[in-house]
Image (cartoon, rainbow, N blue to C red; front, side):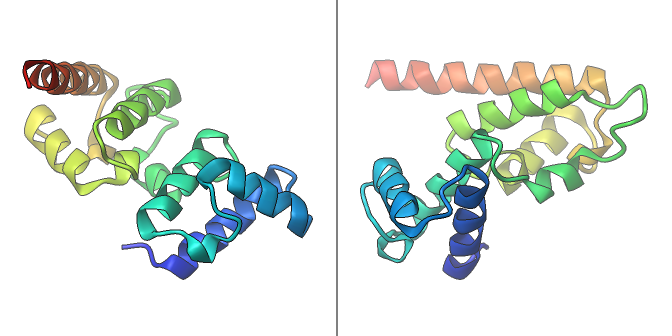
Length: 146
């Protein structure tokens, strides 16, 4: 699990990549994102949300997603677009850390009959994306019935 100090480091790196290197600019940006002028005032969930925002803005690389992807240069491996779609669906399903979430790994193992997501093929990834979409629709239907 990521610690607060690791989140602080990621937030400062991402903000700097977005161009918020000056302290006043950084604090204004942080306030616009989470309503607080200091990352130290944020809860763990708020810090995770800021990091997800930075990743969506392409200000941070997600090293765990790279590790999960496996050998991307082979012809039968999932494309970057497929991984991006799967990551977005995971975030919509409440998995803040996307494809690195243990729920995603377990769902992939169960759905695609592979031992780890890094062994997915393009066809298996299509099946997985369809299953994630169905999961999202089922959650929406449950919310509508409430």
